[in-house]
Length: 74
Image 1 (cartoon, helix red, strand yellow):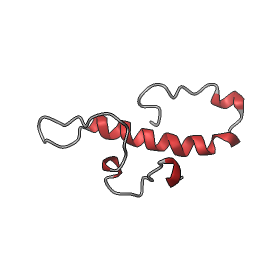
Image 2: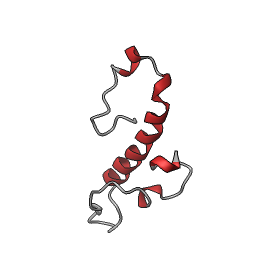
Image 3: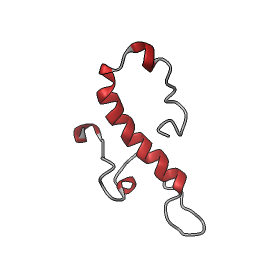
């Protein structure tokens, strides 16, 4: 999984290790990475994990999932 870019949820501050090609969006109040940026980066990493395991999910089930919208992991 790590060879494909997955950084597990067990890694603290993993959003700082995830490269998604987009610039950091900072929270104007704290100067830290915004909550939305953190969520998107973690979703991107989690998608790698999902894709590596998706082969065992029946086609009928996976066709009902929409991964194109931010927030799918919720």
